[in-house]
Length: 71
Image (cartoon, rainbow, N blue to C red; front, top):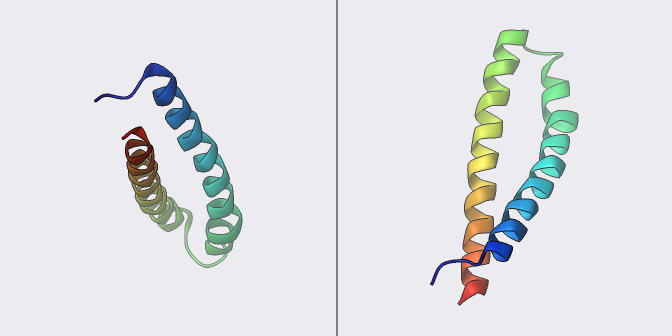
């Protein structure tokens, strides 16, 4: 069975809120210190990889949780 519209909105909102919080932590505690060690180009590359991996993982975990609760 597919997800209801309300459940889809709740999932999307949950994903966004968690993303904002995780993103803030990554910037404050990972990327800012890296700026003192690496060049701006290296930090940009590292941040792209970090944000891609965390975004994919976060979305996958949240989707699995919401699909499990849908049963």
